[in-house]
Image (tube, rainbow, N blue to C red):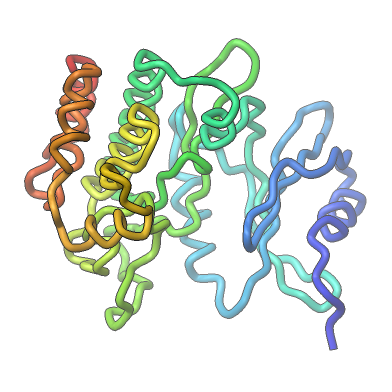
Length: 282
């Protein structure tokens, strides 16, 4: 019988074996952890996750990221399977981003409309790059948006664990009621597992939802005292953005987001450049 999995110990042991300096925990999720490590004076993020079943999706993530070169996309250095104490792990070496996550930032400092616009344009430009590569991230949320450290405040999209490669067969089963993603930040086509509708406009909706939440202080469909669960169900049933949220976004100078948050992909911005231009204007 395998011993209980200790990702901290696995990370420290891996660093020791590879000659890295282990600096400790950066963050922990439900199924994976990230650590700071240093090699030849250069810091990088070491990410470990337990693997159950095959690694097809993980291999796809690595293949997708290796082909991407954009300042608002996290750079992947290496990814591979690793055995520790009878457990199969997936290991990722990724660039270190010292500015923390948007999720943490929202709890620590107020975000201004100008900051939201800067983040939105930077990430929309990253979506343009992914669109050119025929990739859909599918999990854009505050926890997956980070910032570079020091004077470089550029937003960076991370965690491509459920990336969809549009030129490859889908790995999501058709019988599943809900497709991959984080429900609170998912487009209707994700919530309803409508695989044929998934494309860059799905990421457009997810990013628009994050930006709207930053501006409004709540999920845009959770107005009038609705719970987040109610909001998710409302999005899944394709009820349009509540008028109060749409008006507030307009008043804040972000009418552009009301189109990005249309519940049918065909009604959203057709091309990434259209979305970027709209964010710059209003």
